[in-house]
Length: 150
Image (tube, rainbow, N blue to C red; front, side, top):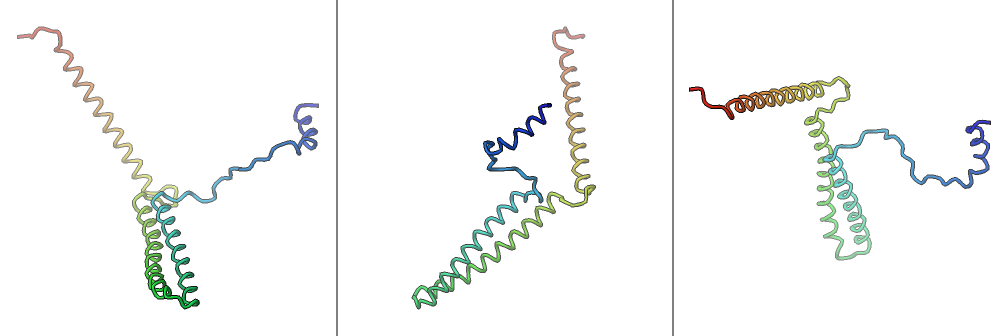
């Protein structure tokens, strides 16, 4: 009997003693939102929830005949405008982020190719700068310690 068979045979008896994991990582189905978009989405959700709460309180104050009903209804209308603006902000932020960062669903996107070319140009420029600095140092070092040839 090899070790795998022994483990399998003893597994049924020892399943009760094996601690279960509380948290299991699963691969994400969708990619994570960009930070600015996520920030705008969180802000919109908070504003929308506060608006809903405010609307419910305004409704209950109206049913109760409280003096607070009229100001609450007015502020609920204003909050609805702000919540709509916040949701539009999420949409606009997402569009702007996609345009600036060139996220295209096609794997061979032109934006990715442009980034690759820019990266290659920067590397080439840095390499030529290093080479010219090395040549300048070498030329400066040649005259050091020698008498002038006059």
